[in-house]
Image (cartoon, rainbow, N blue to C red; front, side):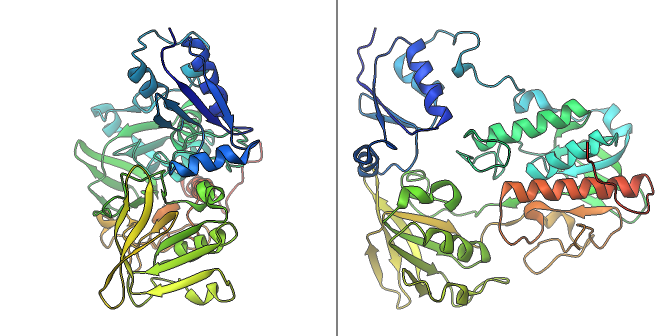
Length: 420
């Protein structure tokens, strides 16, 4: 059967590499394996293709980056279902269509103890804690598979999860756990809120949802306009996460584009890997609490004010960036990668209007216990201003908010932690 030339680039300890190996075996394909951890020459071969991730399977010189069995089967013309229990069958968890239900009349008749607006790591973690505490819990999300965590291609640093997995897989684990404890997940959009009464009201296209407490966990909305070439070279030099991809730029030259706290923090992390870090700031000032002075003393970081990336250039791999300088001149800079942390990523809190206090960028203002300016309303994850955006921080916010909701609903004098 094997009329294709198949080369698998793997790394030691990579669970998706093991899945790919089993899939290739099940499909009756022979292949050459090149372990980038054991042989740096193979690592460099991936770099020459502009690829900064593993596993990668080349089929007839066509690369499949990451674990993409369905795309590979389509290319190979394989129609057989995977064997029961095989790695390609995937983990035995529900998918988003199984977890999220439609809004119906029965749901609108209920009065919930806690409603989470957003089903990402913050909202799902809150649902786990709240449902386990026997609170009637509802999670509302308009696009469950489109959030920041859901579209993250690889997670390898989540505490207690030693294997690598996709962001969507991690999120599904949280949502499955919450659903098993009794939480309800619905696919809908919150159009507006009314927090003036003790029982809060949330307007959905289908009707009004009532809640004794609310957790605002909407996450952030992306930039409306992408840089030319950004989508084409994602995973081939374009990145949004140093934690995920920094190691692939060891001893390389990279650019960081941004004007916020996250960009500064990521620059410090990337400076430990890259030989040279070019920090491009689109304007003449930083946003929020970001302080460019934090980068002083790092010899391999160079700061460029009023420099904008107009295009990410390359052929079959990223080769550089087209930069508009402070003098409005266009220059092509040769860099191996570009990390984007542009200020367009803002919290999706516009629908709240003036119902709770927000800062000038739309972040909900909260105290140490995530209380907003309205009693019984909490906010966390990317909806509040955090030192850095990470899934584990959002999940911790969800736990705090749920225990705060338990205090409100059950009229406790203090929050009760869950120890067992």
